[in-house]
Image (tube, rainbow over all chains, first blue to last red; front, side):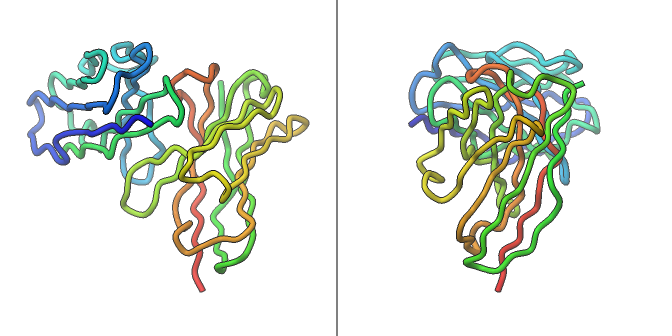
Length: 106
Length: 119
């Protein structure tokens, strides 16, 4: 069973700054099937990135994903006010699927 | 447009049974998997299990196996998550999400169903 560990737990930044979020897997993620989701209060999660680096439809290009194997990164190049939220990584290549514990960008 | 509409909030007592639903529209229901995700109050996302409606094949997280049942009724394009005996620790928001392959990220999500279990 793969365990995903996200860091930091909370990222305190200002609009316009760069955000770098980390997701580390306890074992290699099959085919780099690693996704990133954004969740705002009272809303369902929204898919940002799949396959470690592929932006989902309609996601602004300030969001980018990178990494492979066990180490993955979500980068938000310049934070917009609407980007302050909680971000989760998820592996969907092996069972059971797993989410990281989340990083709050405040 | 793919849409998932979930059933409304529920308040139940410990030991009671419950079934919540997730109705798909805008696509052929049997061609997409449906997954259920739990979010306890103030906590993160937890993967519970998934179903392929085309043949009702299901997979569960070990953490939820035996405590919940995932099913689907293709005639009404609806997936279900059910409990036979609720616990207070089942209090959470439950989301359904749909995806084309078993190994696909979750592009479409329901709005969530709040379940409160309290004596």
